Amino acid sequence: MNFFNKFFSKKKKISNQQLTEQNSLTDDSLKKSIPKEIPKKIFKESIIEDKSFDVKDKTVDDKLDQALSNSDNIFTNKTKKESLNKGLKISNQSFFNKISKAILGKSKVDDEVLDELEEILISSDVGVKTTIKIIDRIEGRVAKEKYVNADELDMILKEEIISMISDDEENIDDFIINKNNIPHVILIVGVNGAGKTTSIGKMANYYKSLGLKVVIGAADTFRAAAIEQLEVWADRVKVDLIKQEMGSDPASVAFDTLESAIKKNADVVLIDTAGRLHNKVNLMNELSKIKRVLKKKVFDAPNEVILVIDGSTGQNAFEQAKQFTKVTEITSLIVTKLDGTAKGGVVLGISDQFKIPIKFIGVGEKIEDLQIFDKKEFVDSFFKKS
Picture: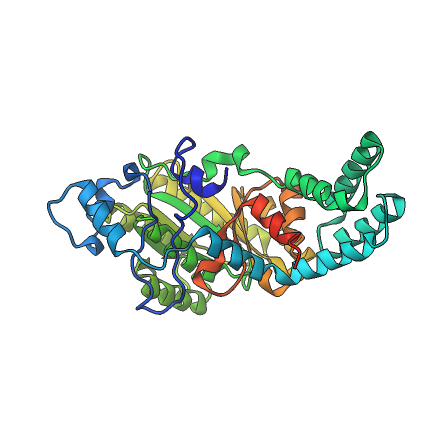
């Protein structure tokens, strides 16, 4: 079951054509759109009273019906897959073409094929430890099943890779926004240049498209550019941004953001943080202070700490994940810039080695190209034949 289904209810079945997104960043196209057939129970009173609905004294059903009738640019499951396939095209061609050459003319999976497969996985930045685990599992299956031909290798490899990706089922509490425990506070961390600010803007649009009221906090006060970029995104998505002057105390901005979100009956709070790793002690102290001041306002805040990493950096992404997991607890990941690299295998290695679920992946520059991560869809796209 993917995240989108679990977002609303473990038991609620939702159709494939639900996910709404926008196709550009222009003000005209960023209209409010709400997925079809969303369970009406998620629309708490504070959401229904959002001015964007422009409805007074109507029932919840009436307001929801009006919102649905005004929605457009529905981001269908088909469109999502097309975007994913396009975004992973470079990784797919590099990976799949190498595998095709490795098994060309082979009638069975032997030691030579496995050796070549090992090299392919490592060169795709899956990582040595994860690669060894995958090869060991395939060797075990080959030995057990006695005979495995080359045509079956794709299927076996896909199954083993899927089983290695950390499943959000194990961390389901990190992926659910409890409507009875809002605002839901998300702290976003990551090094400068990883796509953190852009991801926050796209996340704001995503949550808003679900009918949730979003507030952004610009707590990366060490870079004027970070505040300016968030201002642009907040204006485009039409959500509130809380900021202070450059150089202000990040914890103070975080506190003001949460305080404002509570007053505005917001549902989701996205707080940007400084992306520095050169001084781990200061970074750890800063993040700890932000958490302490948030807890003064809401005892269980932050509800999530999401690490944004640049997938195009390959093994450097491993190092980023390693360093941040040392200084703070990370509940989930966003892996960005997968459309511009042949190193998409880094997603597999990071998920396996750190046992942290991946929440979003970035597969392009468009606003809909920040997608909820579905491990089966990801691996299917990775192995997609042209």
